[in-house]
Amino acid sequence: MNLIVDIGNTSTKLAVFQWKTKLSQSRINDLSCEEFEKRLTEHKIEKAIISSVKELPQFITDLLFVKIPFVHVLSYKSKLPFKIEYNTPETLGTDRIAAVAGAFSLFPGSEVLVIDAGTALTFEFLSTDTYKGGTISPGLTMRFKALNKFTDRLPLVSATTNYSFPGQNTTDAIVAGVIAGVVYEINEYIRTFENKHSDFNIILTGGDSEFLKDKINYQITYMPDIVIDGLNYILEYNAK
Image (tube, rainbow, N blue to C red; front, top):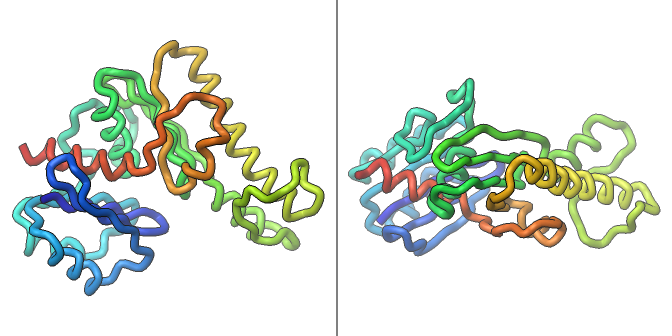
C-alpha cells in the first residue's frame, strides 16, 4: 500500500492507495507525531511519498524512513514523466509539480490547464510532455485577509453565497469584490488561453474549487484531489 503525505500551507492531507485505488483520505490541521504514528499503524504501508510547501517536520521523515521500505521526498529533482521548462525549478512548489503529474496521468499527451484554487490561485500549463510554467496570485481567503490587515476599518469576512451584488453594505461589497475578482480572473485567463490553444482540457482543484466550480463559464473537469492523485502517480513512477 502507498501512503501519500501532502503538507500544504494550511493543513496536511494523508491518503492511502492500493496501487491506483484510493482507500482512505483525511485532512489534519495540526499534525502531531502521535497522530502521524497512529495513521501509520492503520495500514501495512510499503511505499510513501512526501510533498511539503514548507519546512518538513523532522518527526515525519524519522518515522517514515524507519517504518516504510521505500520513501520518496518529492522535489524538482525527482524522476518525472514530463519535462519542466522553468528557469528556477528549485523554487517550484512540489504541490504544483504534483498537480501537473495528476493532469499528465489523466490526460496523457494532451494540453492541460490546471487551476488550483487554494491558499494561492495558481494556473499551470502542461503541453503534452512538457510543463510550460504558470502563474500565482492570492486565493480567496488571502484576499479577504489582505483587505482586513492592510486597512484600518475593513472587517475580516469570508466567502459566502449570501451577498448582494453590487454590495449594499461594506461586508457585501468586500465579498462581492473578492469573489467576482477571482471568478473574473479565472474566466479571463481561460479566454485568453483559448485564443492561443484550440484544444485543451481544464482541471479545477484546490480547497475553494467546490465553491467556484459553478461560477466558471467554461467546461471543466472538477478534480479536488488532483494533487493527491498526482503524488501517488509520481510515487509509482519513482518506485519502478
